[in-house]
Amino acid sequence: MSHEVVLIPGDGIGPEVSAAVCEILEKAGAPLRWIERQAGVAALAQGGDTLPVETLDAIRCTGVALKGPCTTPVGGGFTSVNVALRKTLDLYAAVRPVRNLAGVASRFQGIDLVVVRENTEGLYSGVENEITPGVVTSLKVATDAACRRIALYAFRYAKARDRRRVTVFHKANIMKLTDGLFLRVAGEVHEEFPEIELETMIIDAGCMRLVQDPSRFDVLLMENLYGDVVSDLCAGLVGGLGVVPGANLGDERAVFEAVHGSAPDIAGKGLANPLALLMSAVMMLNHLAETRGDEACRQAAARIRSGYDAALGEGRRTRDIGGDLDTAGFARAVIGHLS
Image 1 (cartoon, rainbow, N blue to C red):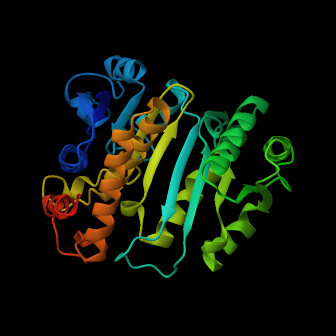
Image 2: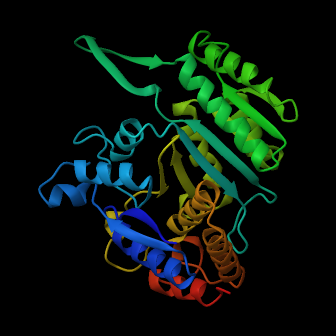
């Protein structure tokens, strides 16, 4: 059995890290068949839109994609490809596992948490208006349906992976209606999962607790903007965006992606770290194993995870995390530990 997966190499360093990850997946025996499509600047260069219809149709058909980083201009230009993907394909759950890796410097040890972020509404709904010159507003959207399905996802995730606690970050003391709804619905969903502890924390206090002792947290549940900020904060606790994976999941489709930027300043130099995209590919393989019952995917995922853990433990790292390997060198180091 092989699984068709859409590969979106991305922009900047995307094609380099994608090539390295595809090589490792092949050597690990992952039963995949790639369908390559473009998005972002790479799609524009081919005369298309930043998110071509053929890319979306391919993901709808296969149900799964692996995506490299895509450029998002700041303060102008085209809108975020990542946001468009999530909204168009209704990928409502952003999942960011964060854990310590051997050989990667960190101020903290014992970190093993997961950020679950609502992906489709909140302030990222993009409803902004200029009321009068010099006065603009941005509308925060919260619906019972979206709050309920992300809370249900978080508790199901916690139960399936033997996690003990879900902590909801909120600002319901100020945003009493929007965050109040999110908090209330999380409490209602929790009633279906009495074996999982529910904890609530005002987000500013929660961030303080995170940087004091991140090891106390398990699954973090929050709305869109908070999740965006906190997931990057948590990445910084274990070494940065180059050492954490990311997934955007819906009921029918899933896109796994490197969550770091496209780093155009080092594109083509062989310096990029492929680890984040590789870890995302491991998440993808486990997703295929769970949703399609393919044990070969689970075995390949375990081999790759053991491979990069062993390589990092030996000090085989790229320069961004204190090593001296280039992109291809790190890929060879991981492949050397596949078993």
